Image (cartoon, rainbow, N blue to C red):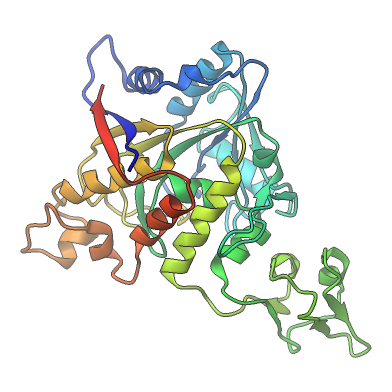
Length: 372
């Protein structure tokens, strides 16, 4: 079995070596300069943080990375896709405003900010994959059109996938609104006649001519044509079309791995993960709970599967912090060496995603950790 290299730096600093400087040194040591960035459009995939949540990666790191990529001849931009749920990032107008409020703007981040799937989340590219779960993942156009993808991942817990790291940032985070629906749903959408107003927005935007409003002004889905893309659910303002049956954690993680594979298909990539402020839940909430472990460091690799595995292993071996949701749940237990994400979210199975990522050739779970 092949072994991937994962590089690690701790968070100790000196007057001559700040944390952004250590991150740059880590990226260089891990080999980021071996990528040809000259005149290439570089998508820096990052999570801008839901307003009210303060656990996201600080924009200072993004600015340092953008400056490095520009010095190598690249044209970097920060990007993320819109969310399914209502909030501060469900459309490009609010999403950009949220990003700016959290410090991600052309001045502070040293590069432009682009919402990958457009104003309403409908701007995407289908990447042919013919995967076990996803035939053609729907990736935000700005990310799909980029020449190179660099992921900056805040490693933290997640209530559906167990944790969010490189694969989730790439797979779920790059998915358009319709793509996120495909990831979350195990079945095709269904209509709710009581809520349908007959506005025909779903009919107008269905790419497969699978939904029509009848004489009774109620939408009806032709399941022989429906591909389950969920665009109708994303566009309906009245909940007249809703998601079908929910997916399991195992299937969700496997789908995320396939979406990450689509994002990285046929293009160079590099990945950085920040194991700090490891909150029990995702940065998509409008708040962040106390960290469950101490801040550990920053990791980098060309292999997103190995990177996620290394981060998960470090969190497993770390002590749990008092005052956290984890210690509140297990106040008298020694949790060093235990799977903390499984303890926080018992119904999740993050291992399934990494196993599937390895199976489909996205990377390997076998790694060598190299301290920088």
